[in-house]
Length: 445
Image (cartoon, rainbow, N blue to C red; front, side, top):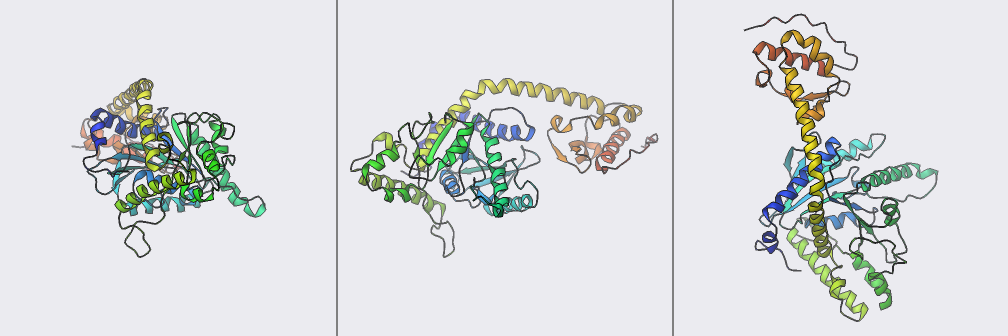
């Protein structure tokens, strides 16, 4: 496979409107998760067991290595990667989206993102549930990245039965429940990973087909192809593996046939244990591995692979297929999403208007009109930025996060101060806080 360069024709093939559409969907995905809105933001949901090579495949799709991006015991939250192809980006640029506000992101190094994920793992490990379905969202730009949104889920497990393994069995049920809930989103394309040389062994498909019984929105991928080829003694075994009969692989899967991938082992780094000195070397090894797999398959078959068969071999083939499929889903979803956005916009505008009207209320109406309604006001859905507070699940609106003199809707100065102090007092109160009896506020100059 030819290396992408600054002259890569992919840049010319993607219009400015398509770039904007892709970026809009990235932001929409984060907002839909944060505010529980029913926006259908297409994405690729990666589902597999801990030993299926899930993390390695995601790294292969990204075009660079990123430790702890995968599931298994390495992460207790799904990780969403909004990847954007940028041929001018010589090194991966990553931004971590805030958990508190999905429109806020901060540029982080790979090491800082790893540290954040590990801290989340430790925090959740101490909690009763131990897993959280809220996604860690990372924006990635790189010269080898495809235009894809990938959600990498924690790895499924199959612990042995018995009382001694009750803790592992409980974790296994929690992970499967989380993954099943994510697969319920019908706008997601499910990437079902299988590490087997016999298609009758449906390990991950057993879970996937409970949600998508016909595999109509599922792409099946056989990982670790390089380790399977030597296991085939006859060419007929390879033929059945590459094109499994309908009786073996039920359903009408996306792409009509499985994909087959290999990712070379070894890590990128400067240490003596590192195999690759740069991500460019890793990308070159990935391309070489593809060509070696094709050559090995042709030797086993005793014939050249057809064009259709070659289009199912390698990470690059899978990446191109997913990128085209996701782009089509973007375009197909626009007509249904626009009315939902307009409805949400009208609702939010109405709530903001009500809030601004209350903030403009004369001072003698503050105690009677504003404060009693604060507990009932859904500030989190009415304001664009907020943060969680300690008192009874209240949300601190942006008005409390800056000086009262900055708020444009409150006049004159003494009124600004009165409203600010009233909000602030109520917010920082503990759960057993008793409302004070406010005395008349005396205006000051």
